[in-house]
Amino acid sequence: MSDTRRCPRPRVVVTRMLPDATIERMEALFDTHVHRSDARLPAGALRAAVAACDVLVPTVTDTIDAEVIAAAAPRLKLIANFGAGVNHIDLKAARARGIIVTNTPGVLTEDTADMTMALIVSVPRRLAEGEKLVRSGAWCGWSPGAMLGHRIGGKALGIVGMGRIGQAVASRARAFGLSIHYHNRNRLPAVLEAQLAATWHPDLDDMLRAIDILTVHTPLNADSRMLIDRRRIGLMRPHVFLINASRGGIVDEEALVDALEAGQLAGAGLDVWEHEPRIDPRLLALPNVVMTPHMGSATVEGRVASGEKVIQNIRMWADGHRPPDQVLEGWA
Image 1 (cartoon, rainbow, N blue to C red):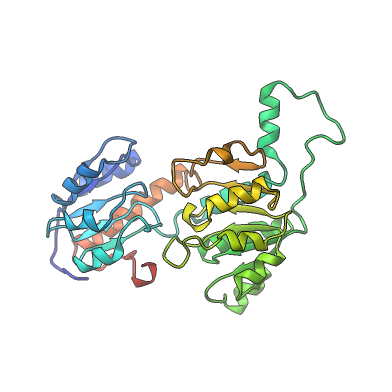
Image 2: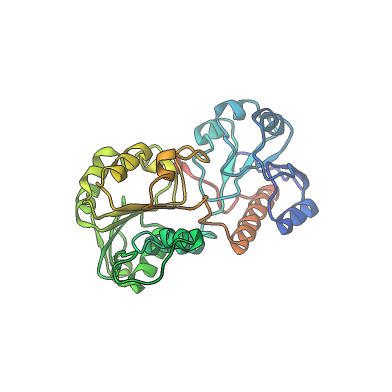
């Protein structure tokens, strides 16, 4: 790390309210200052925060760009992100200032995989449509042709990004009778590929032509932004369902809506959005889209575990050691 001096009780600024257990521990261990709100910290307040702390604890809703980092005092040496994704942080600007960036990988894997599997089931089986029908009072009872969806057993699931979450989704999907196909920059070890009964596609376009359901699990970075663009959406067959519980910017949302409206895709399950929290009104009008409010990682257990990771990273840095979850060059 760039500065190995001990900082026994660093001044820590937390940009929004985290679980009570996390805040209580942080206040006991550090000189902690919390923005006690469930709203994002205003831009001016964010710049003021980085000018007066040793450690910043942001969330995905905070844009830590080059301008914010330029406003940081020399004492700011650690950005301990609450969450795994770091696309909201300018890593190059942070490195140029000698600021370490950490995240909280691994703790949200199972929760996000559960949510993904829920979307994989709910979209083809039209669960959201059925729930709305019952609540509307318009349901007239069972009939042989009502609310017909599609079974998922026997279908081909394509996974973009076969890291922790992609593998956890594959494990769940196998139990539902889906065949597993994946595209990843690097092929999995043969033993893991055999365990998941997964077929590697080195060419993403080839995989898109062969699957029935697509799910996205890659970090959002320069390589993955708009990875599923208009051209690639056009490669998929009309019966395909698209699931995204990763990051909105990976899928071209306008092209997705156009394809759904034109019947070029059968439906979508979305937990993330390109311009979050704004959602294209056309999506809201489509009955074949299941939408959830970025809640893939929203479990009590996951949030508390993320807080513990943040605390561990700060403590290791404060003791003069390299934090265990330092984000390295590959994320930029």
